[in-house]
Length: 381
Ligand code: SF4
Image 1 (spheres, protein in one colour):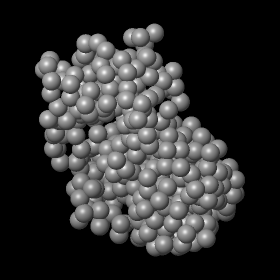
Image 2 (cartoon, rainbow, N blue to C red):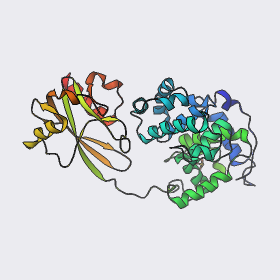
Image 3 (tube, rainbow, N blue to C red):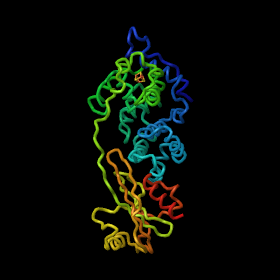
Image 4 (tube, protein in one colour):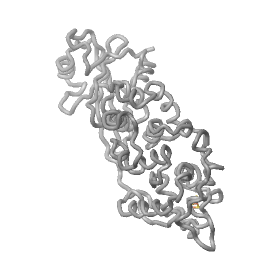
């Protein structure tokens, strides 16, 4: 590991999961030693003890792979190098920096939390887990990770990958997202902590690395695992059963019509409400259930009244696009109209804008909206 984290000495704490007859080394000690030798050691957020940078990386990594986060992390820090810079940044700037990473509530919470750190803590991150966990978007596991990486605090983490490692090692049955199972996993996570603070960085990173690279969901590489000797699921041949899969529930389907109102080389965008899907991002206007469909003679009239525009030509229904969210699948139905003129009074406001298609690549839009407009751009060029 680069920087301070890599140079910290192994503390030798050993208070849980030492199994006489199997191994004399504790679970924590084996994980820490393995991490120092074989773990991921050169990620940009490992080269710092700055809680702001560590917090940013932890939030970005919550639902996103390392490879995707790398570029976003660097870009974000260029614009907002400190928590104070983030606190005073415009909403649009933060959302644009996040556009494409998904799960946009993370960006909104990040912004809120930065303001709180400045207002409540004078711009210095609190160094205890409870105070960190009070920040919007920071749960117990993320708070512990920030505290461990920034201050060597001895506190357990339990993200999705770590749940899998602990469930297998301790042989805990059931779906880890179920609260009763999760409770047992927190107990295991507490019991396995190193006794020595100087091991916390390597131990916490080691658990993350093991879950991400060795203890894979399917076909874990147990031969390379530092805790395989006393892993319950491996010994019992139950790697496929533990942890149990999420109970199957088919995702509901929704469909939504989107208006592409095109004036020359620009399209009309509206700002989404701050809460909900794509909250605070620019998006194509949605057509509701009460709006007429494009084959209806009332369609053009309705559009002209609602958006204060004059439609120039026939409307076109473009190819639908499917997009999956965690809770539902969305069938997006774009309808394109060419605009002759717009009412000057509402040409642009804080809630609407006309985006030149040439600026598409540099504007923060939800990924599927960008895709619809890219298709349009390639069709018109
Ligand atoms: S032995 Fe295999 S299943 Fe057990 S923790 Fe290690 S990689 Fe995971």
